Image 1 (cartoon, helix red, strand yellow):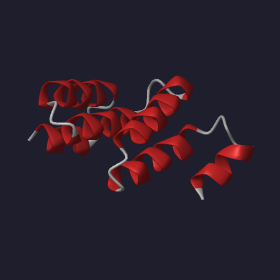
Image 2 (cartoon, one colour):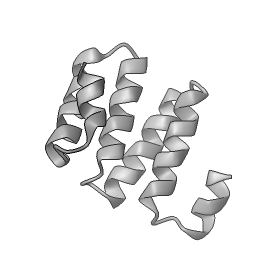
Image 3 (cartoon, one colour):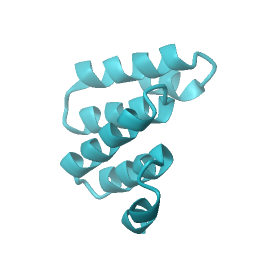
Length: 88
């Protein structure tokens, strides 16, 4: 579904974030990371991208890198509660 949307809207960062989230839920970490990185290229100020990349890192067991992404998300939008929740 997301791939079909990207065929016509390849410049839509939100679609890449959605694809990354879906791939992460499926356990496809490489594909998830690629999707989030594509989204970051289109929207480098996206909190959702940093959270997604953090979640991929956490799934890989790399808590140091995950926390770096969550801190970056917090820096991008200090009013968004999700980075604070993820930082625990």
